[in-house]
Image (cartoon, rainbow, N blue to C red; front, side, top):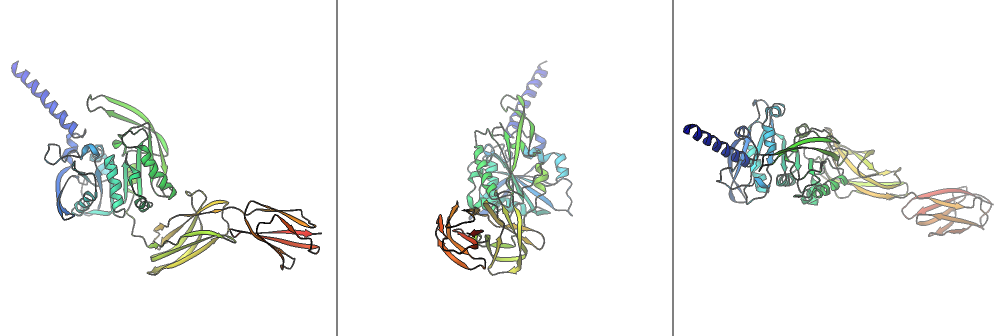
Amino acid sequence: MIRRKTSTIGLLLLMTIFSIQIFAQWNQPQWVVDKYEPYTYNFVYGGTNQALAYRLLRPINFDSTKKYPVVITLHGASGFSTPGIKDYNINSLRAINGQFAGDSIRLIHPTYIIALQADKSDMWNKKHFEGAKQIIATLLNVDMNKIYVMGQSAGGFGANNFISYDPNYFAAAIVASAEGNKISVNNRDKLVDFDLWTMHGDKDNVIPYTSDVELFNYMKLKNAKMKFTTFIKRGHSTEDFMVDSYGVSGKLTKTDTDTLTGITTTTIYDYKTEYAGTYSDSEPYTLDWLFSKIKASPLSVKFSETLKAYRVQNGIKVDWGTESETNCDHFEIERSCNGIDFEKIASANGQNISSTSNLYSICDEQPVVGINYYRIKAIDKDGKYTYSSVVSVDFEKFEIRMSPNPVNNQILIESGSSIEKIEILNASGQIVKTFLGSKQILNVESLSKGVYFLKSYSKDHQIRIQKFSKI
């Protein structure tokens, strides 16, 4: 009896220790921990010796004849740890790492997973990014066109930092509950053509939901590739939301476990997904979306700062320039009436290869009434393309009303636009009278009887011609 009691106490003690271990591992079971190999990478950064701890999950059924993607995962603030403590380089494993460790995902998407571990004294910064790049360089059979980064909360903040440091290094990123508004305007512009999927709960009381809304609204104005999923009435914890399927709208069921009491609750959330631009990928399943992305090739065209649009006599003129062109086949000029939905209105041939500046120009003779947005799409001979920035110009249709018609002595002019001058032409097209400024009453008493034309010029270069008779 005494032996059995001791054994029971020992078993309870073992269970307690195991529970504490699981809690420290942020609910990642031992089989997940065991699949990720622990390493420390030593390197020099900024002239100082550095050590970067990480765990590595290798592609399942590794085949030396194939190349494999790499996903860098960045843990949140509660995962920052101190070298030497028991769970150091275990805190880096989060829900997303448990999902990647499952054979169902590994068999469909064989990939390297690098779970970086940051120290308590460090928020994710360029040192970690440079270390991660060097770690990737040591791996066998890496597809360098398919490097990705994912993170939630502070990890999402770090992922935003990583893609801002060098967007051309990565093919895509998924971030959740991150402070998107911390990305500088200059870096946002670098990410316009980058495949970024951001997620956030609108009831987050740790990192404001509005921070990612601000980033998304900016990207919408740029017609960017970014997409944004909102979890309605969800708070901060969204790490285990990053592997799922999210269409335009729908519902998802999530089970949360209280780490103190062990009590689980199941909640159904509504969600919505918005797209920043025409070329946002609507693929709903996050991993299919992620692994379909390939790093963009270096830009074949470097646009100069000369893009502008302005009113001319017969419409809107669009001017643009390039500083250099490599393998450039042609340009497509696109117009939008809302800054989001663009359509092709014209095209122009490129220079193929040019290291000197080139200037181009087209005239849009059928602009829409209101604000017209324009951008230039440069297309390579291999079908790849890049975009210029977007410019806009307000096209207020020049309307002018004249009365009476026929007229005897005076013509009454009404217009909502500013008039620069009015000319009266005879039937042969000769100018017989000129009136400068926005005159409202024109004296035509001296004109002979016959047919005439009233030619009005607006101050923004529009022209309207109307026929009238003098009696």
